[in-house]
Amino acid sequence: MILTAFLLPGCEGVQSTLAPAGKGAEQIAMLFWWMVGGAVVIWTVVIGLAIYALHLNPAEHRRKQSAIWIIGGGAIAPTIILSVLLIYGLRLLPPLLAKPPEGSLQIEVEGRQWWWRVKYRQLEGEPIELANEIRLPVGEPVEFILTSGDVVHSFWIPALGGKVDMLPGRTTRLTLEPTKIGTYRGVCAEYCGTSHALMNFSVVVLSKEDFEAWLNQQKSSAYQANSELAIRGQEIFINSGCGACHAVRGTSADGTIGPDLTHVGSRNGLAADALPNDPESFRNWIAHTKTLKPDALMPEFQAFSSEELSALATYLDNLE
Image (cartoon, rainbow, N blue to C red; front, side, top):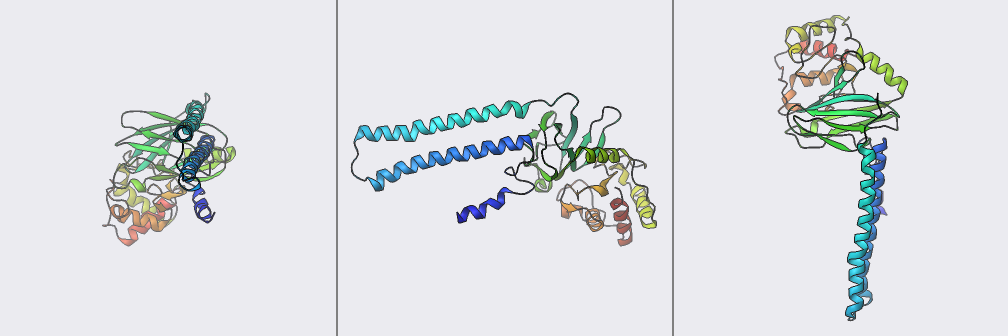
């Protein structure tokens, strides 16, 4: 019981499969507990037979009686239990792999070393692009269209459902339906290089009304800098060539190599959730990229003065 008390807190949190907040995760968690129950039964039977034979009745046992116990308890019972669990698990696959209803929200996610490109498909117009953050409406199925731009990645939101590999040159799909409003954590579940452990993203589940309001806000162009420091930061951003890699809608920055920064200031974290979203983190990320995320493709800009870094950080932080 004492050990259980220490272990139970690990079953909670924004990245726990045992604290489900989606239909798929609820089924997976139920399967897990049935498997735990099956394992306990098998362990109890096998260990119980061993204790009986070695301690409770250590005398010589009749061969026929021993064979019955060994075959029944050590082979037949585990086979039946494992077969039942296998059948139960296979029955979960069709609903977990089923396509969502026609007209459901579709989100394209591309895995990169080491960040996530996210695009919301629209019925009309161009997709809405952001990075390292996904927001979903509660109670609605969402289809994720998954690709990789470099190596094998694996898309996983433990609290919402199962994981699916993202393979270069191939498109995979995953349907998730969140059931609880809240903020959860997504990860890359396949080792993909030096900064694999720093390739995460936040998942925010909103009410349908709040989600629609957020999506409409994401369609808009970037915030127009109106303070002296932010205007200076925008000038540095454009003149230093940042727009060759990053896009900020409403400005001349239209790069496609790196993350879209149009509304970066409104996201929950920076650098694929490696840093909090605040001006100081922007400063550190721009000047010490390689230190914070080894082997990241973005170069470090240590040549910027402290004043220039502050201006850039202010501009980016205000992009909400």
